[in-house]
Structures are given as C-alpha cells and as structure tokens.
Image (tube, rainbow, N blue to C red; front, side, top):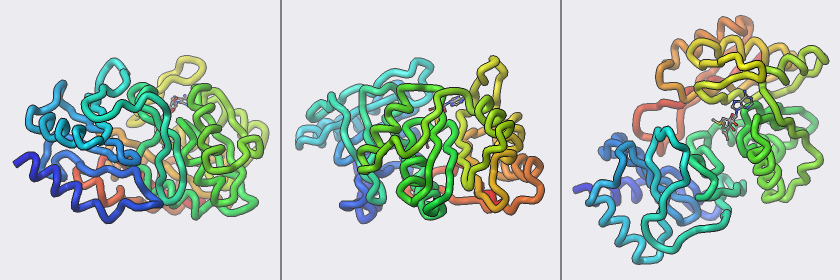
Length: 300
Ligand SMILES: C[S@@+](CC[C@H](N)C(=O)[O-])C[C@H]1O[C@@H](n2cnc3c(N)ncnc32)[C@H](O)[C@@H]1O
C-alpha cells in the first residue's frame, strides 16, 4: 500500500519535471495519504524527510530498491533540534555540491550544508513572481536572504539587487548562485548583518527599493539581542520595510509559522501598511497537504 501511494504521488507530478525544472516536491505527506513522509527530487537525487525519527521499514525497502537502480537517496528527520546533514540511505553518495534547475534558473545545493540544502522548494511560484515583477532599472532588497534564490530571480528579471543575511556562508552561497546563472555578482550588493539594523539604516539614509522580500525565520534576534517572533512582531517588520519602499513599490511578505493563520497574518500586514493593496498567493500545486506557507503580495 505505502509503495503504491509513493509511486502514485510521483507519477502525478512527473509531467512537471523537464529540462527547465528538475527540483520539485514529489510526495507531500498527508496530501498524498502518507502522513509525515515527504520526498523532493533534486536533479535526480532524492531527499526524503520524515517527522518520525526513523524510516518506516516499507519506505526504507522501497528506497533501497530505488538506490540499487543507481538513484542517490538521502534522508533527514524534520524539526530536529540539532541541525545535522541528511543521512545517506541508498545509491551513490553525493559528497560534493551539485546543481538543480527551476524554471530555467540554476541553484547550487549540497547534502553537506546542514539541515537545509540550499533552496526552499515551496517558494517556487513566489520566485517566478519576483522575477516577472523585477524590471530593468529597478532595485530589489532581499532580506533574510539565505542563499539568495530570490535575488537571483530578481536580477534575472533585470533589477539591481541587495542581498541581506546574518550569515557570510549563505551570502557566499548567494554569490555562487549568481555565478551559476552567468551573472556578475559584483554588479549587485551583498550585506552581512541584521535585517532590522539595515532597514533602520536604509530608512535613515533615505534609501528606497522598488521591491522588498520579507521571508524571516519564525524566531530570530536582532543585533542588539531583541527577540523577533513572527506571530507577534511581523507587523513591526513590515512597518520598518515600508519605510524603505518606493512609492509604487511591491513587497513579498511570507511566513511558514504554523501558529499564524492567513487571516491573522494578512491583518498584521494591513495594520502596518493600511494604504497598501494586498493579495494572498497560493502555495504551489505539488504541495497537496495543508498550506503552511502564507504569502502576501503588497502593492504600495
Ligand atoms: C527561512 S531562511 C530564508 C529563506 C529565503 N528567503 C529563501 O527563500 O531562500 C532564513 C534566513 O534568515 C537569516 N536570518 C535569521 N535572522 C536574521 C536577521 N536578524 N537578519 C538577517 N538575516 C537573518 C538566516 O541566516 C537564514 O538564512
């Protein structure tokens, strides 16, 4: 039964894969009647994630058979306290970084980069929208940028981007992603540091951006140790970003905080930017389980 459900879920999404997109969610937990089991394909390699601390024996047996056919398969447990690398399960090991493509855009991933592999696949549609909204001659600020996937899309659309993250390792990954798409990273800006600090600084300097992306972690601390919690503080973040947004600019506001539903999330944004026009954006269709990622597009 489990094997049949896994194969049905994969077949259902097979037509979405091709030369332009080879990274995609193929199995989405209870959306495919496989509670707590998720599978992403990453240019032919599989990453299985489970809420359980070990693989179900039937799932493991099926993976071993797929691995015997030559498929690289790694596994990770979700919501771990310790952010470790995925574990090799079957097939050839992948011990170096590798490339995936999504809508023709290349991203560098790794199974040795800790808990996250270099891209959040659930942002597929938002990346596409950011690219189509980033015209030549505009400026886009990507806060909490991780490996800069949104920046790469905005730059491919024609914008000059500013990529902002606390981590130098992630900013280096963002530069690699620019290079992977044959763009010169030195035509763009990279800021290491705290988003709240930089937003205050940009506002003080009177700098504004035509597009801003806000996709913070559920919990964070600013450079002064002040705690940020999405469910309490997102409105404050939107107000600070709003102060750096051009008059007819756009903002993409996201959260995957499960404690916050779309209605409350939208209300927080509306209160922080009462004159703005808001549109909520759906998750990609391959995410068939409950839509945990909330995305609101703001037009100033
Ligand atoms: C959920 S990831 C963002 C994913 C990214 N938006 C994407 O789609 O690829 C959160 C990122 O925020 C960064 N971060 C956490 N707290 C921060 C802060 N106060 N200022 C800047 N970056 C922060 C982390 O280093 C991490 O890269």
